[in-house]
Length: 435
Image (cartoon, rainbow, N blue to C red):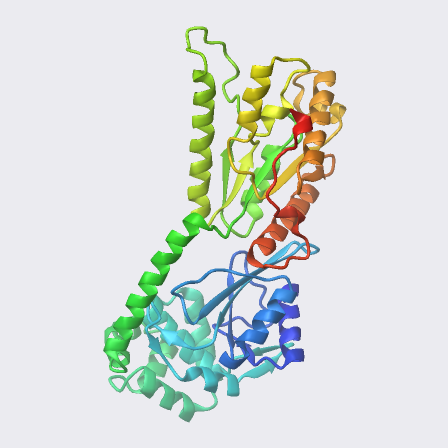
């Protein structure tokens, strides 16, 4: 069992929270990466469950228009494990909006079984839920769900209870015995053909209320999309370092292993090299650079609004790091403007390694130039509140795990008013001594 999931069950048991796993997640199952673990919680116990999950390091995601679902995500830095919980307080059917509530939650919780340190559904309840969810909500029964249904059909003991439940929610058009016979014989086409009749049967419970719920949820989901534009729940992270420190390697590994989708946005100031253009009017180069930076930042903001973590490969602070030992006042002012052209990221990660390591990895520039760049980046980290220096001489996997933990601390800081470690989430700008 996932260690985080084991901690959740233990905390729920100690606090007396009534809960059980749903839809085939048995205690011996290890949830796949980015897979939800569905958990039913007594509606009266949702508040204490939410508090317990916060203490365990879970972050609750916004889920406007998705009631009765509540989503929580956590990261175990020690074991490098992710876990997402889809907690429901009511069994409701319908897709894409859960418009048909049922009274199954109380019976599921009262009939739950204890297995290997966790609470699970009885075979009768799991069979009913898998069948209704696959036929009504998904409109399909994948191969793994079919195998599980056949297995559960052979484990059913309380046939009277299951027959009554099927009559109430599947409808009288198909006798419970015929449903069980279709499952045992693998006649999935007949079951899927009954979907329209099942939906009509459920719709008799209140068509007007169902339409009102669908309209409410549709408006709430669209409202969240607008809200995310101005208040994204995913932070922005800037990776800065001298050449050869491993920025690209770290960004690629975070893209592959981070729980949420990751978008990498290059924010380098001199992507094509600094070329002199004498025919340009004065100030046009600065305006062009500012426009490019603003466009990239706006594109990154779009991806944050779409539910992605944004990694900035380099940032505007490079304008300060690349400053020559001596330059005129106008050039210093230009670098100052470029460094502050965009709002500060939520997290600034500075990769650090000795010049000899950088030269061995990249083979570009000279040792003196690399050492000077390294000192500049360390000065940048010292002048920026909340910046974190990562030892880039370690194996890439160790660097990635530490960076993941720091980024996750920023998630927790954004979702909680009182965070135990706010240094990763404070807004910041470089101080004047770097100019």
